[in-house]
Image 1 (cartoon, rainbow, N blue to C red):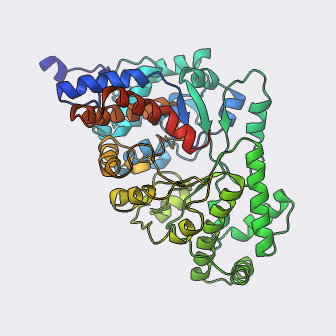
Image 2 (cartoon, rainbow, N blue to C red; image 1 turned 90 degrees about the horizontal axis):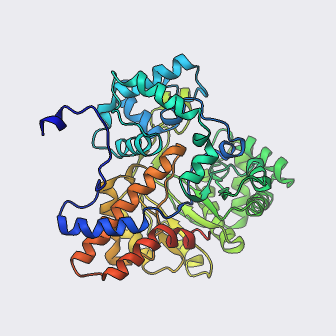
Length: 475
């Protein structure tokens, strides 16, 4: 024990995150082992496809493992480390600044104790890069040099890591007006055999209250070739861009707003509000009403063109205004809020909830709705699936609570399979490994309680890793 207390090394225990009770752990160990090496299916994430198109060596450890990962930088920020001193939103860093960022992260390694961030980072460092020293102020420079040497090797370039991570499908998140040139380039490259697909993400185009919304309408008109001076043109332009995405391999459309109300508007009312918003005279209530109506329209479009519709609402974006103004979005300043689904989605589900071929995946940051709303909804509507815990809930105890909250109502078949939702490329295998371990633990408990037979447990694990995401996201 004394040796453990004074250890400065870093190793991953083979039974990490598995149940503590020996009998259940033995079952979980076997279940996890059966799926550990299965390919990774990532149907929702934020990796830039140009990373794989260009296949250039990663620049340095800090810009690979620290600056793009808001899970890492937000905890450091909470501990008094300024985002500016972490290189956030600055692009590639000179060597001196990059090393300084890495030193700051290592010097604050203790702030990650007990968090999934610690699990992911340790997995990346040990499993991918072979690091055996624990990050600290004393080890920072040696680790930086060790990682820099690794990154210069061909085996650590993006495409080589894609293959090493056993990624079968990687979905990106893309602006509706993106020309998807990077996806087209990958598809046309005879040396590339992976599968990277775009995801249609129209949030900004559905928020008429946004200050840049008239500019977005102009851009949408230019890219689609359809006049967006009125509501009907706007809808037609959105439909055209969805077809463009489908032609480039997209299988889903992703939506995130503060709520998921889907109250319909009459066409004349929608057109009136649209024109007012374009002129800058729409009230906030009118703009919200149009956005809610358009979410209903997105479901109608999914029924027609087949794109899976995913919803992950309930976030107050840019909670700290000065940080958002200085660094932009997606730097860790977004905070969950309460959300309601049952009444909010009723207009959508009454129209499309039983439509053949329609897939609606509901994610939430408000775990109080798992058993009260999401599981009962998915237990009735054939179109609806409960999305995996994500963002703040993408953590061991929250994932366990998710399984306990929903399994008794919907089992496993009405769930989405795991999604990693990450911008940090090297965290993908770590996140999926964590999910597989936690699910193995939960399924093992059912076996130990004689609620599930051993052969069924194996089928469940394979389905959660491969079957669910493939079916739900139409992959």
